[in-house]
Amino acid sequence: MEAAAAEPEVQLREFARMLALEIAEFEPEDLSPASLAMKLTVSVCLRRCDLDALVSEVALGRLRRSLMDASGLSWDEEPLPLLLLDRTQRIVNICHYTHGLICRAAAHMGLTKAAAIEETMRAWDRLEATEWARPSAVAQ
Image (tube, rainbow, N blue to C red; front, side, top):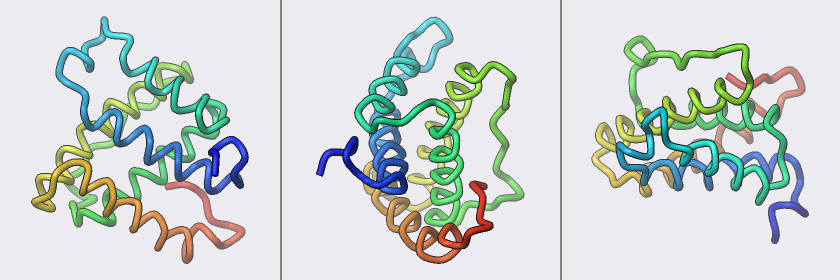
């Protein structure tokens, strides 16, 4: 099934998975402030999943929660991403943070980044079936 034809929850999940797999492979030069790699990657993933930037923040929040749940990293020791007023820069900052979190989670789990992301998506599914399924649930 194509992401654009999917239900909104499926689109969020597919966007998060696609983006995580892409940015997990970034090299240091891709993460430099002068590089357009992050902005272009986010843009391509948004377009492929037929999402807008506002909704991407929900997906990134859920991805963070799922990464933390799957990896067992300590919430007390995990930094928070900087959230700026400018939406584009805020999303880029969250993605930079997510890249680092993927690396930390994979190392903590003793897995490759790709395998850690697949574990993360299983955690996403568990959370979606329980916490996110409630009407009052919000992205964390």
